[in-house]
Image (cartoon, rainbow, N blue to C red):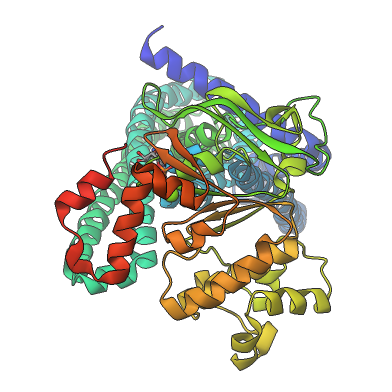
Length: 603
Ligand SMILES: Nc1ncnc2c1ncn2[C@@H]1O[C@H](COP(=O)(O)OP(=O)(O)O)[C@@H](O)[C@H]1O
Ligand SMILES: [Mg+2]
């Protein structure tokens, strides 16, 4: 199949899918259709009436008709106006409704896509899909639904009038139309290419915006404002050039059509005038014909710009469908079971994992964690600790082996019953631009005031919350920017406490904190860990020492395992990590690059 044929096939497919979305609104569409027929009939009737007006009023001077005609014209305009309003409203209703549905479907689908999709796709690009591309589809849908069908009936009616008035001349006039179609198709193709490129550029701009606005602190800190402004300027000008190409193509298509139309009218004038002068035809016939032809111009022109909009819309639809058709990698099985609350143990059975094929990050991990145990994961950066714990809530799917909770493979369990048992506190605290209260209650929105307060208390957050202007009702700013690192962390601990899940994952929860906040956070964490099965990743060995069991992860394997004293005595990776940590506590002079490298040898 050639590329163009494939493209056609895809377009047809997309158009079919769009039509399927229209189906539920068939009653409104049927109503709109009737109104369109009225618009078409009243427009054609006007052209039709030019003949009696000409021949009877102006040539034959019929006074009776003179009284009737103005009334007929007023009525026709009224009918046309009302019908036109009604059909625009109904059709737009359907169009806008479908586009809204698209936006919602797209968002809902994004919510279900796995983290690995988000790893691959820049946030700004996805935002651009939901905003820019859907907007462009909206433009196409509105132009199609209000334009094509309304104009179709009008065009049919007017063509009927010109054929009725003078079929020979009609054949000649309509012969000009195909001439206009050829450049239209060419323009359409060009526009579509431009539109595709400008939407991609738009996505790039959104990516840039998202990164540099979210990273404003870093941009300023490194004095890169001018650099970023220049990057933005380049993109903005790329967009400008594409827009100008688009505008120039559109602006060219309409004068060209007009010129071709002018040629036609000149020819018709010559032939028609000659016939009237020779008495073969009446002025009425000719002017009725000419009126219909001139009235045809607008709808045909609209139809031509509609082709452009349709091309743009299809280009946007293609990108939107690409996201919508992205398979949900981590989906629930058809007969997924409800996982009962953890009873006995969590088990990793020969678990392997790779983000990219051929680059294993975890290799055949075997691990049993009995209920209630606190397991610490330590090891060099990049060893696979975060990956190991991220497999438990199925943020990523194991590529080998299985993870079992009380003997049930987590892939058999429903996602809600699995994730509903796990609370996560990570180094980067993710808070939402909402009140303190809603952030704490995020995992359990139905929690009572007392429960929220108790969680805040246990997370050592009450003091600073009380200092805030509106207490629990204070908005915390996007991502919690109005709070310090330690405060943010304590809020996220309160959130985990309130969610009250039996399994807890702490991924470097205290790593980015200063000593004082760390102390509070540490205490808060102890409250959180009490009675829960916990995976704690930490580089501070003081945190780790209190765990029931320590696993040293390196190069995707568990290389050492035991309690603190046993591991120190072992003289392996843990001993080196421990002595480095000890050196940090003593002063940084003891750390040399060589010592650091030696500590990383295990990976
Ligand atoms: N989302 C990701 N996509 C691809 N590779 C990743 C991703 N996250 C981590 N990695 C890679 O996997 C390895 C283990 O990372 P990670 O589990 O974060 O280690 P740790 O938490 O022990 O520092 C590293 O080599 C890292 O580069
Ligand atoms: Mg990590």
